[in-house]
Length: 551
Image (cartoon, helix red, strand yellow):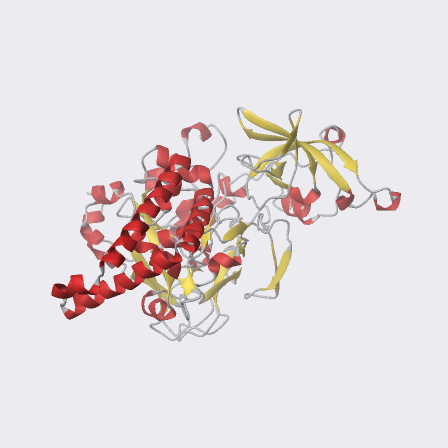
């Protein structure tokens, strides 16, 4: 039910290099000076739409997602590198990789964090015990390169003494023993160890087998200047456009013709975004909210979902206005075009509609280009197309006909999560004093964490998990003797019943208040509102190849 526009879609996962976690910023925990007017309270939860607002249910309510550094060492460039940057990796979870390994989505083995840690320890010990032989091997590799460059192949035997040949043979034999040892312990450890003649490259990246496994995750600043894309031309804030929710605002001035942002896109087709059959008997929207964030065209069933920072917050602005200068705050100041980047796979524009629908991944990229000078703090707007405008106008007409009877208060959830000082009611207490019928309590809980277990009851421990599951509050106890403090939430711990899935649950004690928050029950959020607006952002006619159009 939650579409969360964020940098997160660009962040890949590597279990040996995970350096950041996703922080959902729950409960209105921070305030920032937002563009678009004053302070904006950030929260992981619904934008406080009024019940009668036609924008309700038309945009994602979950927008406050941060990347928090959890391991700064993995973002540090190696000592031998004077300047540069490392790729940001997050944790998709071991099960994400294990499932793909079991189902053949990846070729070869997929090592976990523990395999890289063990391999690092083994290789460090090996390097310390065989420093002389390794240095001799590095020297010989350098000599090999010199011989190749100078075409001195005929002098090879003179440059390599019999003693050196014996040393290299000894090094190979010792390394083979290491490989045999690691294979016996766990084949995935041996899998991440490099060939013996590549140990010098492993030394260059600080003896990190994880870093060695993805050498392109380290790049120099000059490479980034030549091949990278600017990701910080925009930031999020409350939109100046009525009913638009959040918006994207310029953090610096940008001249006409400059690239505001570049985004890769995932190719979808419209049938994929129909609500699942098992949900159709519920009073919910027929289309998933994702379609509102996709690029499309009335003459094709293809959709393209952009995944790049802040792109999803760009709202509609008309291209033609009564303002002669065309510079008013509701006019489009940017446009879409196929990217001129070297990474844009323009050959895909020649493929048929059927081929594009079957495509498992895509290399298509789109540029957002300034159509006039844009000032700092100005909201970035593009023209969503005449078809989108017509659909929105129809929506406004029919919105008044849409029954709002028994619609849950969109502000109730925000109030509950913002009130972190409250003492939570147990399940028995809720019988006489219930929470709103459309909300439920949800607990942070990792099914992969090794909790203390006593007779089937787990003892809650703080983890960096972002896993959340519905939970019932069974009991509450205070842990301070000072009776004057008993009205404060941080003086209580809770026993909860966590529902992981239809067949798995857990009883957990010592859960603090910050481990519990409120969320909508299934099918109760504004994002599934039956009358919620649904329409893709229209691409210009000249961006849609004839081969993609419906016959």
